[in-house]
Image (cartoon, rainbow, N blue to C red; front, top):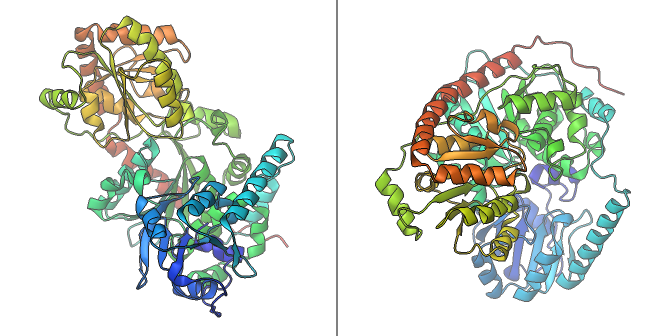
Length: 594
């Protein structure tokens, strides 16, 4: 929950109001964890002054005197922060205050604090702060989680449900669309989950850089703060001065006036489930305090949130970008509010759709009941980079303890269910039996990392598979490898296939989603069946044993990528969509429901 969602919830009351110091909060021994940078007045109101230590999702824009700042990673359980926070607690902190939704103050975090010596927990609420013990609150959180899980198993949980009628009612309250000024560059905001090492995140950065170079005013709005793994692609933006910040990270004092000018009512948000309400409120706050002509959103959760917030803020043009198959292919990512919101915004003036693959576009059209072939295809951009030399590739092998003549397979992907890292390891186990001296470079991070490491150990692959984590030198790894293996059960346009072909590392990929569109099957790479282990192993083994065939396919791959994924096509395609959305004939605003 960012600053604007906190304001809407009423938990923090009037940010400008100040009252006396709450009893029992020893500021000199207090650490505050907040998911937005609280204004001084908010701290005075709820703590009675400044805490000794403050832990935020990103470094403060306006640091307060005498406060030591640290960062934590949002949406983690237990909350992840660096060791310096633990050291600060051991140095004399006995009270931890949270400006977070209570649902995000998990039991594991509380127990960790207790082990470090924290004896008092301060939770904010409408009636003022409440002081509890870490152990008691941890037990409450555990009981609440068990109860929620039980209700879900019994199908009694309704959190997240919305109807298309509710969505249309909310949209009926939206102000008329604004208009972009014809005599100045476009104000473009991109909305994406984070800057982690995913394919969509990279394409956002490519699009933003091209638009900035063309003279437009560009910024990135993020769901997760750009710190740690979630800041992977910041290096693409910084040379161009492109700002990237988490929505709701900071309070803008102009927000209440902008809210009132928009004619928005807090009661409107009672229709939203909590998760959606908080995201919409924080994005809406960003769009009201710094208006945009275009909001370009990526992936389903950001598409839904972005469409709602943009309509309520009167943003003239919105692009919802599909980067994969529709979310029914990913049960862990599907939310019940996605479908009704897509349906409710279908055909609304100023809203345009796009996809980066034909197969992905056709899947969304069937799911949402759209006209066939109605979704524009804008291919991913591939920015060619210098390919590491043979000497550099050999140095990389030497650093990793791999012989110059060893057969090497690369597996570079996030360790998430749709990438099937467990299936990848099973294929490697079979491949080892056919290819003597095999080595595998596995790079990537994700929630399945612990399970993957356990499977590598279980199958006795510790001397074969090097798990390298998130790496900044992917081109070196590809140049040092002979074959790339990607076994996902669904893909949009996997950037790693483009990189591999550019580096001369021949890809073998499952025929999943847009993978077939990211290589030239049979010429620049090999497609295999989704669950054909033997066929996959045979294809990789054949390539490893035939250097001449690899060289021929590598040459074809470089030419294929350069021709089909020209960066200019991404930039020009996006601008065409923006102009089409901005040119939608204005019509009378929909009547507001009584």
